Image 1 (cartoon, rainbow, N blue to C red):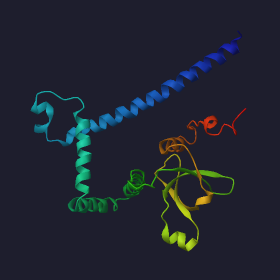
Image 2 (cartoon, helix red, strand yellow):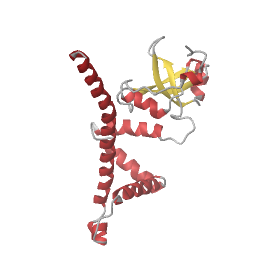
Image 3 (tube, helix red, strand yellow):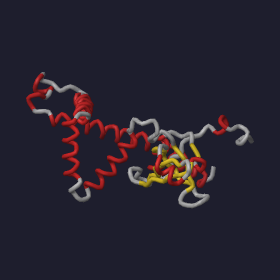
Image 4 (spheres, rainbow, N blue to C red):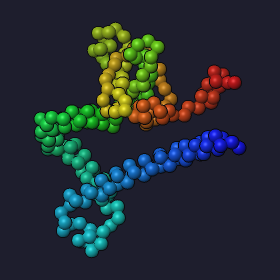
Length: 217
C-alpha cells in the first residue's frame, strides 16, 4: 500500500476513534460537573448536621439526595401564597441587576415553556417557512388557543417558538396558519440537540419504514 493510502486510512481510524471518545468524554464531564454541583448542596447544611459530623463518616451521594430534596421543598414553598411572595421579592431584586436580569429572564421563560404541564407547550416539533418562502426553520408549538388573534386574523393560526442557535433559550414567536405548518416526527430533545449543534447533529429518521414508496430505490 502506498504511503498516502496508509495516511488516509490512519486518518480515517483516528476520526472514527474521536467520534466515539469525544461524545463519551463530554457526557462524562457534564454528568460529573452536575454531580459535583449537586454534592455542593451539602455546604448549605450547618456543619453540626452534616453526615460526617453526625455519624463520623461521609455518605456517598448524600449531596444528590439533598439537592433533590431542596428542589422539592422549594417547589412546595413556591406553590403556596407565602412562597409566591418570596419568589416575587427575589425576582424583583434580580430585575434591578444589569446583565443578570437578562440572563435570568430568558432562562426562566425558556424553563416555563419547556417544563409546562399544559398539553400544548413544547410537545410538537414543527417546520415553518421562515424568514422567506422556500426557507424552513425548526420551531416548537407553544399554543393553539389564540382566541383573539384567531378572531382578528380570521385564520386558524398556531403560536410557535423559533429558537436561535446555539442558544435555544432566546428566540421569537410567530403566529402561523395551521395549514402552513409541517409537523415532524423528531422529539423535542432531538430538535434541541440539532439546534445547539448548529445543525450538525441530525436525528435519524426511519424514512423507509414510514414512507417506503417515496424512498424506495
